Length: 472
Ligand code: GDP
Image (cartoon, rainbow, N blue to C red; front, side):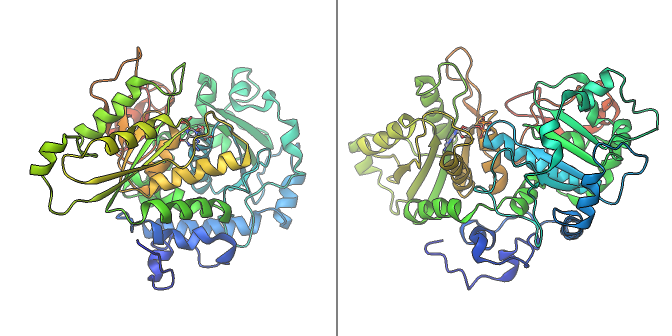
């Protein structure tokens, strides 16, 4: 897209194949209807069933959301354990860890809400309003600030702890707690993992309020709960499109973030013949610029022919391509050196193909500053910009990269996590699907043993992290 002309686009495109509602005011959230001007049309169509499910979800959220009578009644019910679960049930999402972690757990909580007919609300302990627009028409997904539950969360209401101390038993029926707190963070224990068991879901289903604490993409294990499976297959006939569709439905950057995205895109990426995103996340200690990581990036991009090789001036003269291309490389990293070296390399030596390589990096934040408004906005803008590139290289295990890959509908080249400060060989592997990896799923010999055995239809070990599973 050279200069996006908004008005001339067909309607289906603007609404992403029917995913998005037309009910919104365009100006309040420009990204919602303009994203199709920056992104190539997705080759993945949402199923009609998903579209209709989202429409009924929107009605449910309007009926039960903040400010409604039903919401008031459900709030009053808190603290009074009951036998009936009322007309509306909720899942409150709490932000945990960095923005990529938050986004993958938010999408997971939303899928769970869809499957179980719950209303998804965001705890406002951290401010998400400067990052994302409201996704549901005519209502709000923000949990009111004066909501009573959030300041009295204690671990005695944690589902795993309650199982461990026999305070609750999924096999018996009786009174149902009015709320439960789910601990689904990567260091969770076996009892917390019982959340993914069919029997436990039968109990949890009846609890009016759930509070979900997670930093993980737990969607793959929802596919292994038998009572969810049929519905999931109908919703997502192409299994590896869950994050792609739900992410594009749910995550609309605010006008401020959209400005960061579009200004950068128009200035640096729009005129290129080809764009390549390279996301560099360094998890080792010390972090920062590391020679073996730089070598890994070069080795992966050359081997996979994502970037041209460098050559000498003499051989370039004889080998000149007739129509050299302009390749724009978008590097995202906390540190400036990776893009600086790459830029210098393609300035100091000619490329073997004659192609021109431009290298850009939007920010160099140096260290993670989650909950700093502009820092988070830049992080979101960069994940989004990466998702707009034609080809993508990401760092293994990084949810930041998973978000970019999923939104973009791309299968990234994943850089393996280096061990012993050396460049891995091979340096990278092509993703088998565009889905994020669930890093710490429940054990395969647990309650999901039966479904896991037959699960190769749905999930595989992650490319770069074999304890994890992902949808394929
Ligand atoms: P993960 O830790 O790689 O899984 O990704 P998260 O997004 O959960 O946490 C990393 C956080 O560090 C991000 O949310 C940003 O706050 C910051 N960060 C890491 N890499 C980058 C980057 O390339 N650009 C920007 N702007 N921030 C980054």
